[in-house]
Image (cartoon, rainbow, N blue to C red):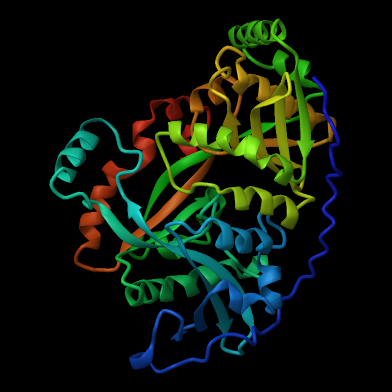
Length: 421
């Protein structure tokens, strides 16, 4: 195994904390009768304005809102321009009564399939209905959060989180109705927001578990020490896989910050994995992958594995604040199983992370069985859901018990912190 050209992990972006600012390019407020999806509306805490990303170019608060997150304002601007198939991106600027911008909250509109991830008898019944009504349980939805990752509140100051949550609660349904959306969803918010978002779960929104991420503590000296921490059966199985792979033609790994020169090689690998997945939401584009390296070079790390010169696997990782986020994997399925590439690539990423002093490895949802045996813990993510109709919302609340995706993955309950879901 060889690693070529790993870049520095230092975050060179110096983003200043802006807590009192105005966004001068915001649309002017109109009367309620003239309100459109782009207009402002009064809320008990101040003013909420729905804008496009172009309105935020000269807004200092926008750069402050996610400055401490791995996916900062640059990331949201990138996905707005490159992951827009099926998504209509907007941002809510929240100002208090003194016209100070307290938050900028990303959201998007999407035609959401509510049965995504549902299995068993419920899936069978839904499929039968869809033979006659193809759009059954597909509803235009206003989603708060990120199309390609976990959601976060866009507060300019951490202490404003509850203020921001209350302000969002007071305006989201109005914006949804104006746009013709019937559902409002806070998508994939980490469980640490449950206190801040209690204004939602206690007032009309149903909180259900989304498919969680997983996390592994990297407190080991090297990969061999990590192996020793696993159960004997898992340890023997991994070593057997690695020995089998070692008998094949050598595999090399390089770590890149910009994959533009190799995008034609790695993008088909991503598509191969995406198309095999049972759950789909976002679909990456070549423009996104290339743009990520240009816009966030200090955080984007692309691992590319080659055998006899041919790319056979790649992984998109983001590094921030001592954590490596393993977001997307691409595999050549002509050799993936014979070479045990899932485990081989994971070994290389963990080895690299340990060598660079990182303390945690975090991976995206799904594929829970190997993660269970590899010693990972769950990172719970929540969905907050409501219908814009007060009459239909109680019906939706009962239906969500059968539509929440975690209900149909039995492996999740085997994790030691499954109770946190």
